[in-house]
Each structure stands twice: as structure tokens, then as C-alpha cells.
Image (cartoon, rainbow, N blue to C red; front, top):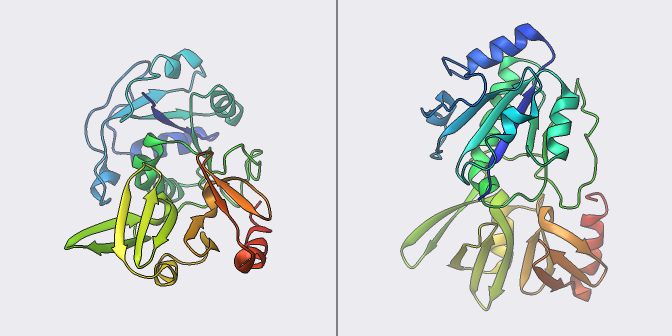
Length: 263
């Protein structure tokens, strides 16, 4: 069972208080407290989220968060701490997967909503560490390359594609798509949680719908999400350490041009 956890490290004491209040959690329970009600931000999201565990990390005691791990694969642990070094220490130990460094309550709300929109993906399979950065207050880990590419930047919930296959409609978020395969006029979208969605279409038409910022075509049958690339060469690409695809000659130059600024 895997638990996704979040640390909000905020150096300013007053801002910590404001952010804590902005979560609409009436009481931040110190040491091993569980909050089981729905968060106000969830009501604004089209997704449904499970329970939260709220942890006060202001004393910088690792046992506070360690005692919760793991609770379940459907629990989001939220911790508020005042030291970025402590947050990084927890991340290095594998206790947390998301770090947010907010500069204001508005900044916090915006970034936290994006975390919620991705939570269902993250709880199934973490592909890296998310660093939600403030341009005016960069974090020392910003720009660091990880073994698995992180979800960065984050994408809004409305960035999705709607498929209709034999009367069944499916909405798939772009950040969940690992790759798209094609067999004649039947395309299949493969997602990070191993789901597959079919539709009758050309691969070119689907590629146009999902866009060119995340996705690149590498051969006649395949379009991939570069965020899931774990290794590549001029002739092949490894995706998520699970799939290997050929980069054919026709698409090799466009692939090289696309990928050169991504890694």
C-alpha cells in the first residue's frame, strides 16, 4: 500500500497560520491526528477524494509523519513545517512525494488544487517528485534531474480528451496518458494506472487532439508522452521502464528536435 504525502514548508509563522486556516480544517491535530471530512477545495474539483491525515510538523519530529506511513493507498497526508531542509530530509527518506513552497494563500490554493487534481494518479504510481516552485523563491532542488521524470509542470483538470467508443464515453486526463497505440483505424490510449481506452480514429487526429507539448510521434503506430520516458536513444525509447518502442527513420529527426530541450 502506498500513501502520498505532502509537506508545506513555510518559514513565516504568520503565513503558516493563514495557510492552515485557508484549508478550512478547524483544528490541526498535533501528533497523530486524523481529519476525515471533505476539504473545501475538493468541492471545487470534479474528482472525488478520500480522507486526509493532517500532521503538525512544526516541531520537526520525523516520528510525527513516520507513524502514519503507510496508512493506505487512498490517504493524502498533509504536513505543515517551517524548515525547507526538514521537508527535503523527509523527501530523501521517502516519507513525502510533494513539496509546496507557497508565497501567499492564493498561491497555496492554486497549487494545492493542482495536487488534488493529480492525486488519484499519484496514489496509483509515483513517477517522480513534484516540485511546485515559486519563481520568486526558488527551491534548491528546482531543476534537479530525477531517475524518473517528474510531473512538472502540473496540468489543470480540464486538460483532457473525451473518447466515444461504441456508445461509451470516457474522459482521460492528459497527464495520465503514457502512450497511444494504433492498429489500422483503432487507437488505444494507455494510462498510468494500466487502463486502456479505445476509439475509432486516426493516430494523427488523436495526436492533434492531445496536443504537441507533451506528446511526440515516434513511429507509424505510436505516440508517447515524453514525461514517462526513462531512457532513449536515436533508435528506441523506453517508457516507464516497462515498454520499449522503436523510433523509425521517418520520425527520428522530429523526435530528436522535440526531445533535445526536454532532458
